[in-house]
Length: 413
Image (cartoon, rainbow, N blue to C red; front, side):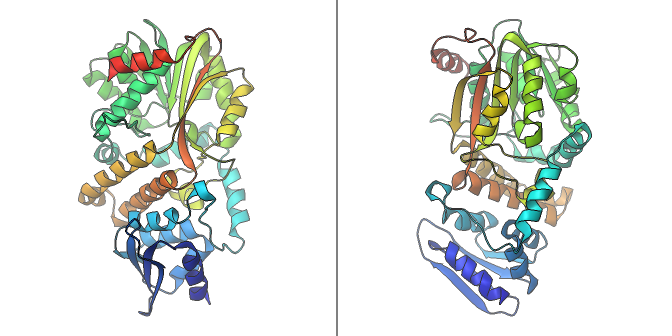
């Protein structure tokens, strides 16, 4: 019965491209039809429990079976498998990959709500779960110069990941409309790439904050090596605590951090930003976002990748910021840039497979590549994109038209 349910589920999903399934007893099923534009994939189940686990929760069940070696991709790759499943039901045309979950959806939703309550202690623990696993992994995966763990900006002139990340930093810097001697706050500064870039190209002082001890140590080293330690500082502090000090900044930038805030904290995040931003200040928020309305974080991501995280809908982000009189002066949607970025990270992980397995183990490598493959599919075919939202507190702070952005950007690339 379970096998039949799984076959019917997969048969309903895979119409283009082919998927061959070999069960533990050696019997074989196949779904789909050959298509030059879609992968030809074969998988093997090591035991009879795998179909049940997938039906209970398709993403978590498949992920854990793959991580444990109980689901093996024998033709193609995990990227091909996830692509095949997601591309057959693109979000743009109303598709959503769902299987029968036998009542687990309600339990997962309740768990998501509880886990997204990120007080200061839980927020720091959640950040450590993902970012304090060792800087070496990220050095192997990300671009060499800037170590940007967020969506790059791909243009006609960007051929490499490093060039695209440089273009992203320039794109954001241009939107900040920086002036000499301004103070800039970088909320969620990562390994310091943004702060170092701004200090190198502008006569400004930058203060970066993070909750990751691993990031903090490396960011300070990188700023020293770049020769900008006199104008760049980093601190291990929660944004809410920083807002309580009474400091104000001329510019605020936050890239890839808002996804970790958690929906219950959206209001407190923008309240803190409003308190930190000078009256004539400008803020640029770069975040992953949902194309549709509010949703929930899937169980695999919550359990293994980003505990406490939540990808916001644009409507949720704007509604939270509106309460604090932050004017939305510019909103840009990056539709496919993150998909290309993720494919570059996945390729780097594949090229460094032996080193990553040696640092952790095979199960970790499988978990990490499953995460990257799933994220890629979400940006290529699912309901995920990136938003860059520019805020100001005074409607007269910025130039009347957007021409200044292109002009400043051109001077930086």
